[in-house]
Amino acid sequence: MPQRRAHVAPSAAQSELAEALAALRASLDAPVEFSEEARAEASAVCPAAPELDLRDVAFATLDPPGSKDLDQAFHLARTGTGFEVRYAIADVPSFVTAGGALDAAARERGQTLYAADGSIPLHPRALSEDRASLLPGVERPALVWTFALAADGAVSDFRLERALIRSREQLEYASLQRALDAGEVSPATLLREIGELRIAQERARGGASLNLPDEEVVRADDGTYEIVRRSPLPVEEWNAQLSLMTGMAAASLMLDAKVGVLRTMPQPDEKSFAAFRRQTEALGRPWKTGEYGEYLRGLDRQDPLTLPVLEAAAMLFRGAGYVTFDGSVPADAEQAAIAAPYAHATAPLRRLVDRWSLAICLAIASGEEVPAWARDSLPELPGLMQASSQRASKLNSATINCVEAALMTPFVGSRIEANVIELRDGGRGTIQIADPAVTASAPVPAGAAAGDVVSLQVVRADIAKGELEFAL
Image (spheres, one colour):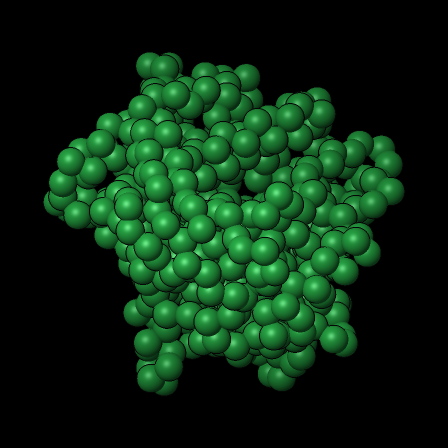
């Protein structure tokens, strides 16, 4: 599925959209500005220098173009028949003092929010985009995971240490993909090989990756907006495997010590599996045998029916949450899609819970007591993260709804064709319009099935409310 862009042209609709997005941002029940005390802490705190010096290791980062809040850097090397993966994470626990103004501000926010007209960061930008960020060419304290991988990509050993590093290069997805496809030498030359081996390990565990196309509202330099939908590049999936490997290592440390916080998700129930099977059959891409993860991995990303199949598969990836523990391990510690216990521990600049995971893991790995601030506040984390996730989901869906309404404004009163992605009760369904690229709820004809093309009239497009109305 190639990249698709849907553009809102400069017009009265564009002006109305800008007002709607500003109102949406203002309506968030989350603080936007940081207190003077929090900003002062972010600019002044100076963590003690790590004893371990890894500045001679040629780390590199890999992120979307223009990113400044760089959480991770990697170094990949071949060792005999296996590999060594060093994965450095921004040392946010050393920059944030428990009980301080910066800590309080981060707990209020929970995570960085991404709006069409800019982000609302978890930490002041002086910290998240400068002093703690693993930017190239500057020295930074980091929490470095070192993994020894066997020839098949399995982890044979790992350790966690605090170290001083200096990233050499800031890579971005598209250009790196082109470089690797062309066989060019890169700091990420081994990423394809290691990533594919880790995907094979995921397959052997029975894990499943749902790599849905990204849907993002982008503001152009001229002030106009567009929705960009694109499938993740292979290099993004390989890179994600490094993060997943680290999250599983963090989970194993905390489970062994019987203290920490996990990201969990239950196995889909039989009702969900049955409904998904029916939808794949209706789409002409039936899932007949094998694990659902293997089925999803085998889908042809160039097939136009892959999108509705992946949308339908989203029902299998529900119920994710956080569970904390101290003194005993959770009865069900597994993240079902990963098919292993897992923790969020690789994005502390953008996600609150990672600071706890990293502080706890470093203490365990160093043979020290878990910091009292982290242990005592563990019970608060699931609620803080749930509230922030709800804000992020509301902001993202409402933003896309407003932009989709603006995209459809020129078509009000016209007829348009759409693909049925999912059937719902009451004669309605989720539809996908190809041009402009819009997903919406609409009435569908009696007897329609997922995958059918239907003809609809665009009745109303309310930009301020982010609502669309269709008729058969």
